Image 1 (cartoon, rainbow, N blue to C red):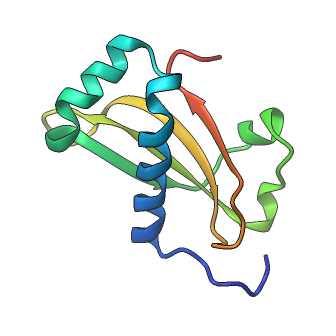
Image 2 (image 1 turned 45 degrees about the vertical axis):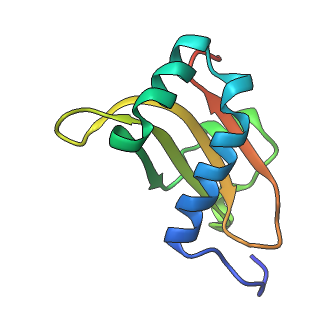
Length: 108
């Protein structure tokens, strides 16, 4: 990891939502996108996690360095738990690195 400035946890959440909202209409089914648009203010969530190894199988990334965070974005249930995960984003923690990888609901 470089000595460059890193995103705070709050900034990473905002960054993940920004990316999601920019790309969601092109990557979600019309039903999922409509559901999100109708309910995101009351039920939308982003949850930051340690990335699992599945990303290394899909994209040319080295997760062992700790440079990345995984963001789950979706709609929560009544109890606040993740009810419907619409996207998983892999974000670099370094503000100078713009790479981002995504897995969308309904895509294999």
